[in-house]
Length: 415
Image (spheres, rainbow, N blue to C red):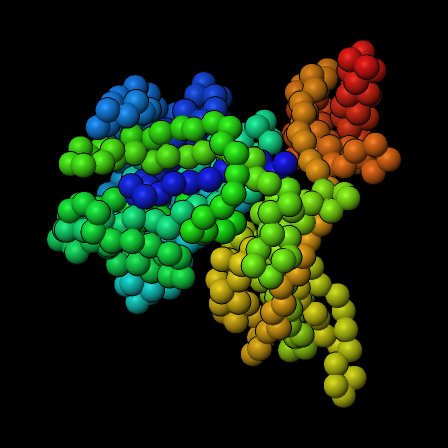
């Protein structure tokens, strides 16, 4: 059975509602707080958790409490610097970066400026930075510790009425939310207030694999994240569900859909975008590939080719989820000399994966285990091995070998 994280966003979503729902779902709160310390923003905030009732529904409320005065606005470059200089894992940095990039591109479009010139006002405050980094931390925890392999969402309720921000009074949904959720199913008017914030919208746009009207699954765990409003007639909560999808679930064409499996592991549908380039220098090409990786591409790869008239060139390929395809095509056109791209839907078969951690003399090291029996592959996390090697004045290979030996010993003991 494939394990899915499903969002019921019928009451909207904000960054703090998301944190609360995922903590109630099983993400360890102390772990979240410890990981957030890796932002290196000590003394600027604290996280508070409490249990509340929302229209009779027991839910968790999480607030990011600023501990000192904050900058009035931070630029997108400031946010990127905070993330890159942090001690978060590389996957958390990339996921948080993709969420903020989603917001920055929407703000740039709304205000008619370049992405790198965008200044966040409310979104540059410490609570939004923590909400986004916290979301990335929670997703990593769910993937590595609770076995979640995909993220799905219902349509997103946006609310109605008027919201007040640094730009004055704006009709709900705010322009940035509309821009972020282009192509995503939404609903309006359930309440006369803003039910989905730009941060909440960007979390789902950047991290959900698919938006579905319905799916067949078995519920395993449920978490309720409380919003800040008291609505009449419904509970202002975000419901997040860990569920198991039927392995034999097919779409209307009869092809494998959610949780379908081959003899090796899961089969999922992804988009492969390709283009040929013969008029671009190698350094700029490498930079473009890096941008694609930071903005939702699951894999980016290239090869040298010969084009017409014997010209040397590159074939650029980016693999992504369906909802990220348009954004990646836009980035390819922006950051390369390409004037056209090819796009095909592919079925990707993945080995089953799990993550374990072992305690070595160089510290705790994570290992990714793919497949089973004869197809099993075990790989220590490179970034953690690198950090351990630098800290202890040894080589990455020694750290890797130590982690693998301890894992083998632990497995033999349990066996």
